[in-house]
Image (cartoon, rainbow, N blue to C red; front, side, top):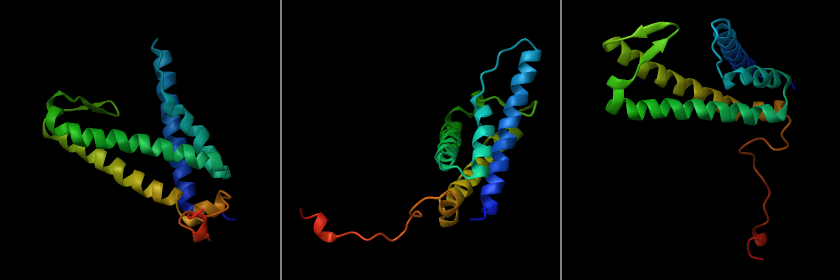
Length: 149
C-alpha cells in the first residue's frame, strides 16, 4: 500500500527533531560538554516510519505521548510556578510577558501537533500501511456465548 502523506510528514518531523538533537550533542562536545539527549533516537524512529515497520508506530506513539505529557505538565504547573520558569528557545532568553506567551503558546502548539500525529498514526490508512491485520476500530466478530462460558 502507498504510504499516507501524514505518515511522511510525521517521519520528516521525527528525523528533523532527531537531527537537531544530534547537532546539540556535537556542539556540546565541541564546547567540552557531554550532553545526553535521547531525542537522537527520533532519527531511527522517523526512518522506520518511512519504511513502514510496525514497531516504529508504537515507539512514535510513545514518544508523542511523552511530549504531550510534558506539555500538559507545563500548562498545569505554569500558573503556580511561572515566575520561576526560565524560557530559553533557540538561544533567546525570554522575559516578561513574552516569556508567558512563548511558554504557554509552545505548550498548546505541542499538544495540537501531538493530537494530529496520534490520530494520523491511529488511522485506518496507517494501520493498512503498517500491515496490521485489523485496523483500529474495526468491526470484529465476537461470539456472545464465549462470555457465558
